[in-house]
Length: 247
Image (cartoon, rainbow, N blue to C red):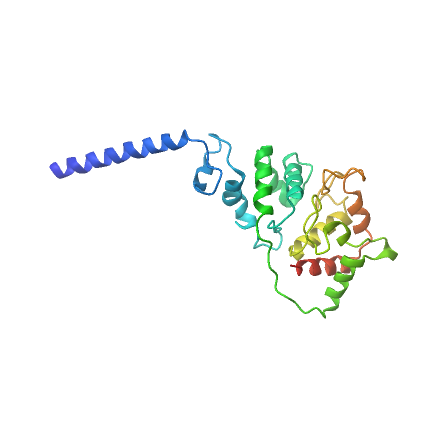
């Protein structure tokens, strides 16, 4: 009986300690680093730090370091900060929409506060960009993609990609980084620009996919739509494959 009493007492004391600990931690403001990411579950108690959301939520698809393992999910590592902010805002207000956006990104971005969006953009933009494996540069498809990226196709009204996306595809401010991006994802996105009216594929609606800060082209997206519509399917694939090989 004495042994049973002692065990019961210990169990009660442990329960009290655990409850006290939970109450204690719930009354402490959230950490702003990765020191205790498990606390991000209590979303109603406090504003969760963006980098905690990145590890506990976004990482499920985009990877902890922003390097996706799925061909249809984009890499976010090293992406331009301003671009990330714009896209998260667009998903939040549902002006950016696609088959995956409706299922996932609308729900993920909907509750985000401006501060969390800024912090998420900070986190992923500071991750090291993916290092791709060198490929055979003599491949005709790669050569064609490189030509489009660096020189465009003037006779078809296609300007060179690097004029907006950086000399090495690293992006510039609100223009996204394309270097090292998933080939499949790039093909899909260029398909959106080619066929903005195909809402069953990816909804564009005239106001989607372009940086919020562009003031010299309205409606947003008109620049990329004008370029992409003049690309053949073969050219789309060639430039997408080439971009995915850039470090």
